[in-house]
Length: 119
Image (cartoon, rainbow, N blue to C red; front, side, top):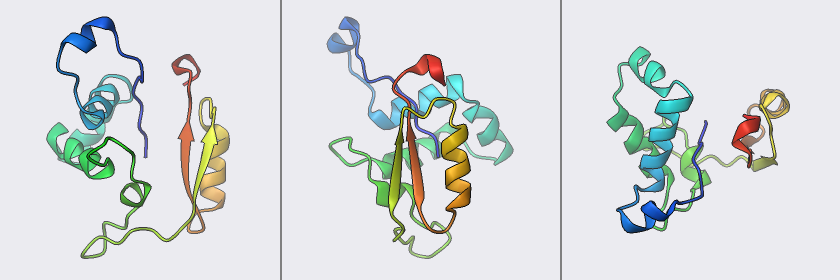
């Protein structure tokens, strides 16, 4: 799963209503990572993506890893019992993708890149 959004706010953001982290994620992914094409292929809307992101963040805008990795195929959805591993400064993600594939079914991975110019 991919989340990309800027953590910085401009001076104008402080005067305006700032979108939620969920809305910012959807907006950034629509603009930069081709989320629109993925949604189109899956017959989903940006609103569907927003609802998924909203489930992944708490009311205080903190990422809930248990919701990100929950098993949607089970009714009701079950949180993953696998450990979550974090790769910081993941660059283009090649290494972390290889690790996630190698540990599929044994761990969930989150990649964090702090510099957008490296993605």
